[in-house]
Image (cartoon, rainbow, N blue to C red; front, side, top):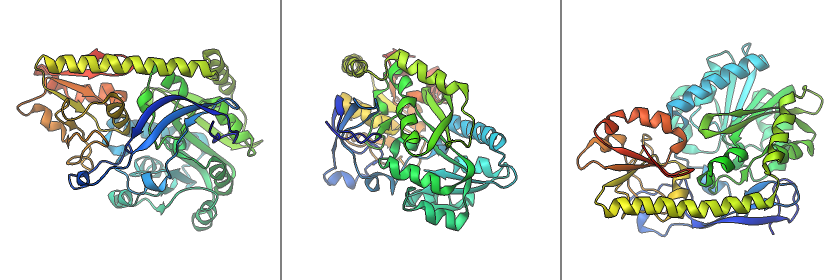
Length: 407
C-alpha cells in the first residue's frame, strides 16, 4: 500500500501495472538515443480510504516540466475550446474590467490570450523555460516556476490577488495537493474562484482510456475525492460540469467556503459517480482486465496488417501515445514513422519506443503508408478532416481505443 495524495492514508492498492516506461513527453533526439533512457514504473492504484485513483510511483515534477514539448496551439479544437472557455468565465466572473486571471501551467499562453482579448489582466505560471521563449511574442507576463504554498505569496505580492485562477489539464499533475490548495488561498482575492479542467475518471472508465496514464498525471480525478480535498482545506466545489473536449473532461469551480452558492449540478455529478461504481475497487480490477484484452486486439490487428504487406505509420505524438506504444510493444519495426503537427517534436523520436517523428506531409509522400494508427484519438474528428487527402487516396486510420476500428 502507498500513501494517498488526498487523504494521506496508506491505503492505495495497485490495480493496473503498465510496466517501466520512459517519461511520456521526453522526446529524444538522435544524439540522445546514444545514451541510456530513464525508465520509471507506471502503476495505478485505488485508495480504499477516499476512493482517489492515482499513481503509486511518482516522478519529481522538475524531471518532467522544466523542458516541455507539448503546445496547446497545435490543436485547432483546443484553441476553439479555450476561446469559448474565456468567453464563459469572463462573463461569469466579471473580468472584462481588468480583473486578474492567473493560468497555472499556462503552456504557450493560448488560453490567456483569449482572456486578454476580452479585457482581463493576465499572468501565466509555468516552469518550462523553452515554452517561455516559444510564447514570448504573445506579450503575456509569466512567472517561471511551480505554483504552490511557497510561491503564491511572491506571485500575489508582485501582481496582486486574482479574481480567477485557471488550470486546464494541469491539476492532475500536482503531487503536493495540500501545498497547491494553500497557494490558491493565498493568491485568490476575496470572492475569487479557481476553475480547473481535467480528464474525468468516468470518461476514462467508459472509454477504456488507459493511455491517459503517464507519469505527469499523478491523479485521475472523480468529483468525490476532489470535494474531500477542498473541504479539508476550507474551500468547496460550487460548480461541476462535464465537457466533451478530449473525449470527456470535468470542469470544476472552487471557492472559499461560504463565498459562493453551490450549484445543483454538483450533487448530480456526485450521484452519477456512485451509481457507476467509481468508488469501488472491483470496478478498477475489471478495467485492468479490459486493458489487457485491448492490447491483444490492437496488436493482432497491426501484426496482421504488417504480415499482409501493408505499410504502417502513426499519427499524433501526444504523451498518451507514448504510453500506448510502450505498453503494446509497438516500435519502429512495426510503424515506419509518427506524423505530428508540432515542430517541437518533428525530427525527434517517441519516448521508449524510438519511432521517428515527421511532419504530416509525409503521409502523402511515396512510399505512403496504407494504414495509420491514430494515437491522438481524442482529436479524431479534427485529424480525419485535416487528412482528407490521405483518405481520398485510399489511406486508412486505425482507432485503437476503446476498441479497434478502421476508418
